[in-house]
Image (tube, rainbow, N blue to C red; front, side, top):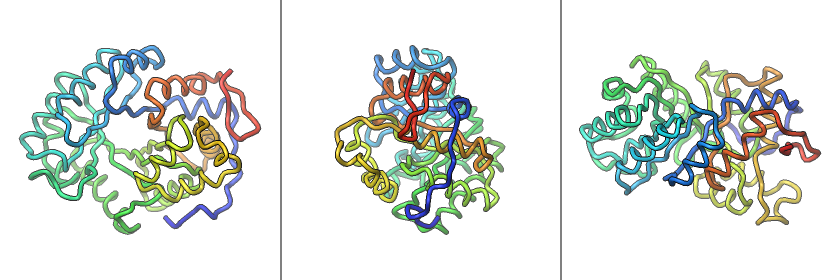
Length: 307
């Protein structure tokens, strides 16, 4: 996964039909969604759409369960995050998983390590959760794990590859369906090159590509710095005209258009978008709907506009 910012962008472009086909499987990420947020999602999204719910450090897991239940009651599919190092014991983990399964009918999770170097207790990491048997016992059938198109600030390329392969193999051995959800990225060529890196290593798992939903450029850049995606943040900042409009709303439609074109051309496969709602979950979901239904027009900036 060498730095790809200097690589010339391959000439992939998409039709409206290509974009619609790419966006139809779009999923969304919410952080502590309010009742108003969930009402907005219910109004915008198709029934059964997947909404991922962040597990926040130093917050009670009851909040995560309540959000998942509310999403299920709204006719949506909750996919809770489970952060291994935030959980003190396997007993606590088992209770959480069973509550999510029984109360929210959750049969899928995104399993992450958690943004802390030291575990809160005996649950050491993602692999220990997979190997515990608690996922199957709780009715979990599918597990997403993290991918990093921009690299990881604390891991080498070889370490990232070994970790990814090991986790996916453990998920398969446990009889579960495994897939990858990536950190958000602002540079289409970086994503395409990373997917090529992934596939050439024999990893054919489905991939949900993380993209930052519409918000201000400054907010995009702030999240990029916090989350360690410096390379694509610099590529974003260098795009002509954007720096002069730092507080103007920006959106990922040019990246989506390029990825949809790459998928239509057969360059990438088994890939769908996953939108991080930095501009608000309701607004992010509403923004995506015209593309999902084909009610867009291509524009001269390389993206698209709703009609």
